[in-house]
Image (spheres, rainbow, N blue to C red):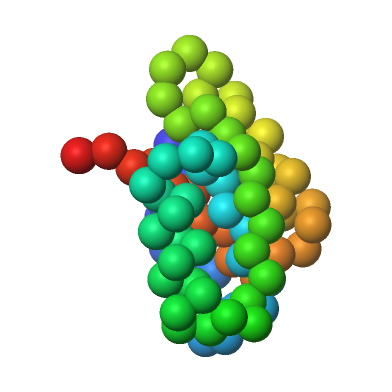
Length: 84
């Protein structure tokens, strides 16, 4: 579908103050994001949308998460998933 074509991409802000995270509420991915953010810039606001990231229902859960976080006006959205 070409959704990752350059014409759709927006530049990542150099300094983000409000970051949306669409991932599972438990697990290594969210813990890593929280730990690294606290260490690098403790003033950043993190907003978690707890989504299913695998199995049935994951696609719609992630899509709903992106839409919800976008509606909140976050600077950047991280869609993350742990695993090996």
